[in-house]
Length: 439
Image (cartoon, rainbow, N blue to C red; front, side):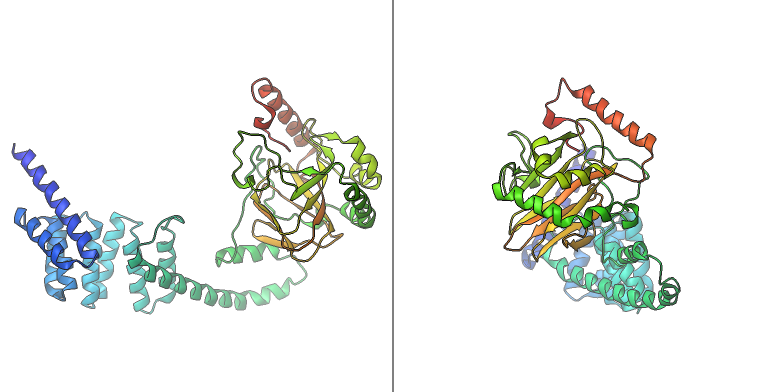
């Protein structure tokens, strides 16, 4: 009976203190005081009661009483990180930084991701003139906040201040690094420094580092380049030189509209996610030349010059899946949402044909504008998206090629494994639910 009573009393105190703290945060001080008196009547030495009384004393201006009460709460229960944070707050008011920092460290030892403790530690470092250490501490604090978290109103200003300190430090660090790196950059001025630039931008929070996230087959130890180096594809020049011929064949296709179809065409019952707005829509139309590893004979016959050029490219050859090649037409004021492809064993080639102004393409952290006749090769398993903000359609020739960093043996193995996976699931999964999807 004694144990049950003790538990009952502890539960009552916790409930009263929680109500007290809620009323206090809402500015209803008289009701908060009434609730605290009720909790004290049950057990005036309970650590939660002592802590709540200390907080009220602090806000009431009686700092010495607050120090004694919160210290007593810690003596009764030193495992509650909130008590240590409150004690640090009292010490801040008393201007005792040498004692405040250990109190905050005790709180963080108990709960390393305690947001209030992290923010207060950063603010203390800032007060001590340690701006760079403060920026690092503020960064640690902000990293504990989930992107979808609802920020309490009381924390909005401190969090905004933290972000400002981080931005200022990043700008100062960028200038410092620029000065230090300048002689080395000049020494290697003729060499490619793009990857290092991305490294530094990521360090400064200016750009993310994206990695491949294939929906089907992720081949390890391949480069994670967004746009692959031009020199890996010497055959691109021949295709670019034929841009006028390819564009003329596209114009003939568009003149009749025969063979153009929506690129996104999911059946009923398939989760659409980002594709809901484009499903079965001609806002993103395609004219297939090769589709799922099969030539579209009628279409190739209408585009003989394009067909000949594609035949000479190192296209992916996985029966039933690749190669794939098509004219892609994105209507005016249209957006292809961010998405990723199925495998990094192949790469995607874009040859821009008709490109009005205000058309751009993002792969990971890089956004580029298309220019007619200037091709590029990218890894579509890195998140990418496209915009046509102009008043005219945009047209690009798109086709897939083997990743040049695969050996002939690896290509043969990938080809066989993909086909075997299809055969394994063939009788039990509809084609749209194939584990390999569409290459």
